[in-house]
Image 1 (cartoon, rainbow, N blue to C red):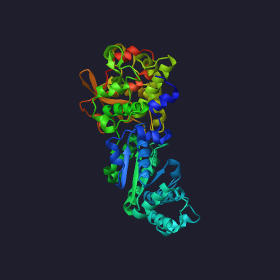
Image 2 (cartoon, rainbow, N blue to C red):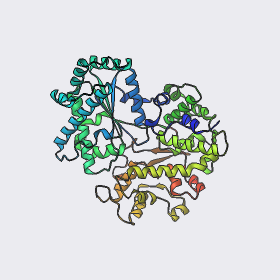
Image 3 (cartoon, helix red, strand yellow):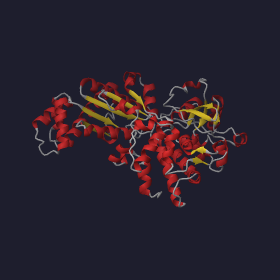
Image 4 (cartoon, rainbow, N blue to C red):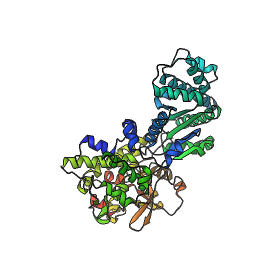
Length: 481
């Protein structure tokens, strides 16, 4: 196989859904059970999951399919809502500002979509008391839109008939710092959306949030319990993420496979579709001797499609450099350190706003000389995990952005929330790894739930780049359930 940059991108997909060609994205999109829980007519759906897990991809595909069905859908991004409620300190007034701001944004975007934005539109909206659906239906009825193309006419006619509009709010946690002001703003936004959905029948809101952001808002503001029933936690099983990879590979070779067809297959059957791209066995050492390549892949990604894309892309580029026509164990070995450093830097960049000194905390989890000698690095009981974190704190206290000094258990909970550490339980030759979004209260006060803890494999080469064999000797493959 020719691993050109074009072929690699077509084979594994783009890291960011918003940068992918929408028709190609729809072709290889893995429409699992979560999709139907989001793409429906319910008034509020909040999609919660880590960065890189596929929230934006799901939103883009759902919007495309709604547009193709003649439905009116709009995307609201962070720059659209910048400045709303910036100086308001009264919480009830803040909610009112968000209600007004969101109603105006929806109206303006809808008018622009159909070339109907006109002078005085904001005053006209106010005459309708902010009821943007009534205002838009009245505007579309009275203004000419004969020059619209057939697809847009279909959308206008459907909206006039049913008064239905789908509003997507994506990437709202951009610039999140985890302080009291951020929490208040997001809480007010969620309350405003709930009020609008209640007052304006016909609008369906879909909101995406990082899991740690939602968790912090949910545990800081009791009013958010009213929207908890609308929250959908986005997570992947190893079987699903393997099927996602196969669907992309099969599309590259011109073969169409449905999500349902792939999920019914065994993992061994799915893995055979990779034989045209990579060697089926990973020729590692220790516990990784003669392990199936797909098991290795699933063990090193954090159950996020973006991780899988990154690791496969790096290995494919290395295969091109060595003139290989299949990705081999050697190619993966050559890129593990780069892959791991990338995941560590991504995590630092993503969460530095919440814990400014996060880099010291993460690098402090590197195995000590004694831990390396005893081969006990990266693996911890609750007691040993807290002891390890306490040793990092000896270099100086760590503070959250709010100014609060983080105690040892705060930092342990933080490491779990960002998936730097995972809960683990031995299952014979394999490990059952649990992630924050799967068992998000598992670490509450670190009571003994029967799980131990480990630094996720994705970070280990960045923490210990000088001894690959030592890492494999201390690492078991993930169970593929």
